[in-house]
Length: 292
Image 1 (cartoon, rainbow, N blue to C red):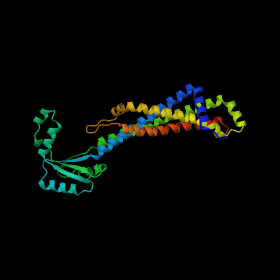
Image 2: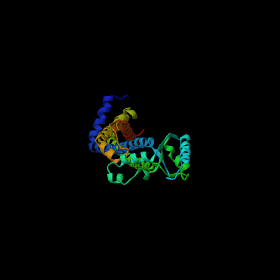
Image 3: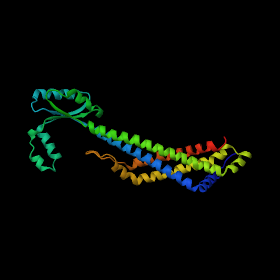
Image 4: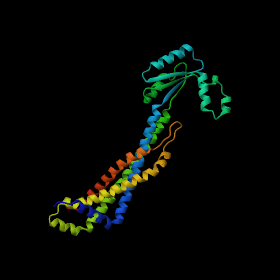
């Protein structure tokens, strides 16, 4: 027995009207789960982008001791430049360090007045070919004669990825739990609709209606619930964008932000997820109450 599209749509609408409260509950749970899921992924993607921007500009600074000789300094500088991990190295004199110090602390004139160029160390400011190799510099030059201190941003980089991992793990667990609840609720809605029409379905099977003829209106019902929930989730993510940006970690040089293209891209995935959740809930509901 073939099924017409207008019949399937009409039956789906009728089922949703008969179980309006459960339909609304299913849509709300789908909306909540997909909103949480989408928010977590927006945060994760934004943090990953911020981390990439930050690590792309990671610098390693080798501060030289005050008693380093010219020969030692030149030998160290040549060795640094010869390393394949180093994209660029610059020697910064005491005077240049003092000029940068004045720019950084321009709003603290008292501090500048009490600091002289001689109080600041010479240094090598190193740009890496691969930001992930910043530990190689420390391993090679730490403790060498003429080297006072080696400074890198490893702690900040680790903090970025730590926040990203925590958000991803915690958010995914929470989203999956709510997603399972949404699937179960949609399945329950479908089961109630089937139970309410059990006699009608029995008669349809007696006159030759196929299982797919009976399934499709209910599956369309679940898909529609999932789609509506996904649309609501996307609409909630748009005004939530500023809040998501402010929720993320803020660093001195890089500001964490969620962009509207991120929201649009995530919205497409949420729509697909909503359809999947709705279809899955329908299949679960049909398997138990429909003799196939």
